[in-house]
Length: 590
Image (cartoon, rainbow, N blue to C red; front, side, top):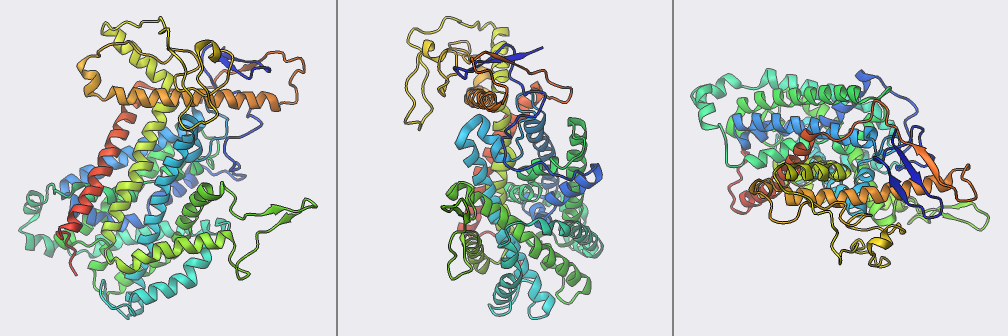
């Protein structure tokens, strides 16, 4: 049995083996979001998860294949789907099943990021969420501009002047989208999820049935010529951005997982795999049939390739437009949530307490514009401006995916895994080096001190002796040299594999996680009614149950790949989009 001894006077927590969470749920949860009152079975959660993945991005997959190359694009999409499944599992397993965090009530992505990396971790994740949400809002308005005028018969696909396209987008979005986005609680919109999934399935069926594949392949010289000429393209990472945008679900995975009844790692693995697999199959089917039907003429919105007077195409446009009307408010809610956290520290309404302890609402401008409405209106106008100027959906999806999705889906998830499992990863690295003849020098340096966290104006320099009696946050750990590795020049594979970077991330995360848990359990003991008044030491049972999941060697390397892959994809994806725009080689048929 592993135990943690917590001293009431000093508030320091010392691990005999490892820090894990108590059997019983603690009094204080890390996240303020309550546990769902109604749970769902596997089928229901898989439907919700699939709907969270398959959104507007699916109609851009044919365009992604045209940019990446047909064969390379398919292989890249399979890689994106696998990374999505892997990272989603890692995030949920860290927050719900990790021995250190199980039962602590970590229910949001940003709260999980704050544990190993503090405020920086939360800001990093929220910045990615804001980019994703904002890019989605712009893309949804573009889809409304592409579809609604064609349905009304006032413009053809991707054609028309301001009054035929932009004006209709403004009017319909002001009447439908903006009022829904101003709602404080979007719970009523969950009933549109099933309709959204049906709409996506209909779109896939329509594209598969009506794409002019035979005539397109015949004009190109046959399927073999298509494979030879479009195996891989130089704009590979432009297509990658669209794929990442379409598959990103990491920021909402924990909310979906919290609704699963009898949640275990095995049951969540089934949800993750089946949801991602279903979403990937739908995206690939639409992407392959859509691309083969139009080849180099494939547009960012595949529906713009079909005739404007086609009844079936207009039915698909209508379903897509309705879905966008109800999906935009959800993305606006995410963007507003991030701004409220960053600007108002979570206080969306700005209410105050009156002299008689009554709640006094914040005065509203013109009687209708409070803090929530002003933020929502500002976000709407910020997304409307580029939607008025831009006519092609493809670059919007690509840039949003290259920046926002790479942060949320790849870089952040990899950093969190290394950070929360920092102590275990450093031990693994220590053992690797020792197996290659690099021995630990366990004698601490005479001048070794603990440094305060950067930006903490109140923190002071602390020596090893001070660290043993202080709960100050440090960057080297509570014991000098505890996170050290063998000194000196390391083997060549150490530097080639980027281990100095991974060790730095793990060390920073290990310190942050330990400090968080120390303070958490200290506050927990202080809040318990049964705390002894004489300052006696309390022993908390920390045995992990069978559902607890620790670190694995394979996932160490997956997390490293996620970080490296995400950084490369971000840099190359953004650079590629800028290059094609500046050099006017970006070609979209009209």
